[in-house]
Amino acid sequence: MRKLVGLICAAIVGLGAPAAATAAELRIVGTGDGIDILSAVGKLYTQRNPQTTIVVPPSIGSGGGIAAVGSGKEILGRIARPLTDAERSQGLVATPFLRLPSAFYVNRSAGVSALTGAQIRAIFSGAVENWREVGGRDLRVRVVRREDADSTLQVLRASMPGWDKLVFTDKSKTAFTTQEGIDTVREVEGAIGFGPFSNNLPDELAVLRVDGLFPTDDGYPSAVTVAIIHDPKTVTPEALNFISFLSSPEAQDAMRQAGGVPVK
Image (cartoon, rainbow, N blue to C red):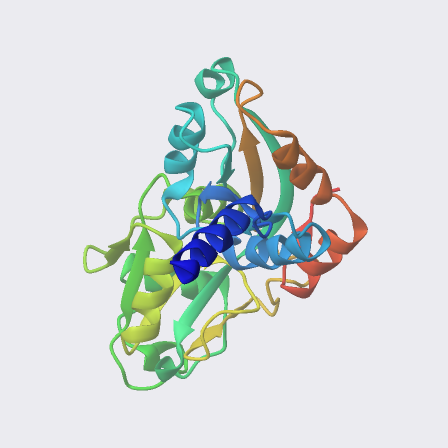
């Protein structure tokens, strides 16, 4: 009996003891562009603000992020395209924080590390079908493209000579997220694709120099701007604090180290 009373007392004391503090999660959903860079900045923020854990889930696309924030399902989203007039009229606010050079990358089996802009256009149009035609291995070219609404493709069409009228080869495979494009090029011999530049691309991929320029070189013509979106009706103080953190010197240093260009 005494043992039972002791256990009950201990349980009551336990119920009255303060629980260990747990960090609240702040999710940022949307585009796959810059996902590794935002994750790195999020970890840095959590180190400085341990009460909040920044979570950057896998890509659901810019449109998915906009829908999630606009419906109130999520507090913050990430996008790689400008908001439309209709989206802004719903109250959504975008805060650009990162420029990502657009990169062309190949499976290393292709045997090339640099091409001209004209050669790249010929590859994606299907005029070049074997890597030996551009100095690579005797291996069939496998083109991996993105859907027409993709932010990187839109930037390429607007900035790379000849891409405004480029028609992709009908033998190309369409990837619907940044990660799917990366994974396909990594897994398929002879594959070539494009997407936002990152220092953390898989070792199986080689990022191409275009007309002698690497994506991070001055004069490289093509880049995507990534922004955080929120709805003033649902945004929290912690979310606003994170948005402000993105413009801090230490956050921008982390972006540069990961291969991005902070928006000033």
